[in-house]
Length: 204
Image (cartoon, rainbow, N blue to C red; front, side):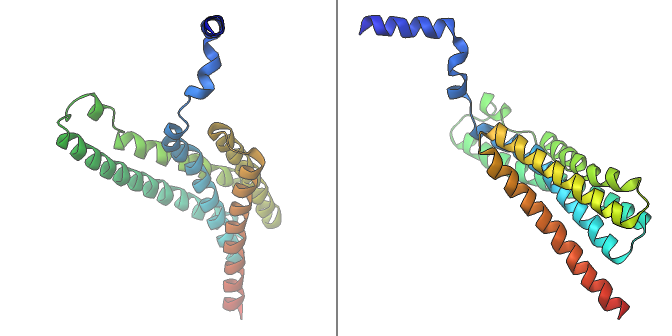
């Protein structure tokens, strides 16, 4: 038994990285993963859906790009404000608990998340995702080709976001990618379809 323990100790000393997977705090990744990958996903889906919805009513490239840019600004501001309020509320609760425990002002309080950093990260991630359909549509004059390119770029980006999220979170890649892609395409399809009906009503 002692020999086996000695061998295990030697193996751990020679291979300090063997335990790295066990020591990874996957739950600790949730906050920044949500703000980064999911924030970019939100920016992509909402902006692409908005642009496709506008294009269903008006085929003009300028209207499509302007609506997408407005969606980027509005969404980034909304994400930043929402994240700021959420983190501030979380800090208030945790600081109150530290005060009750007599630990206020210590290392625990300094380790709490910064609401300004969280807001900036959330807005940046949303903007990165929203830029993809904007760049895809901005240089294409033909209506049908423009819509097809926006959908294609959005689909590829959604698959990439799903892949990154699955790898970082150690989740099934295929299932994660399929869920993200199907959800995004559904949002774009519903928006485009309803706006086509709205256009048909206006024409009638």
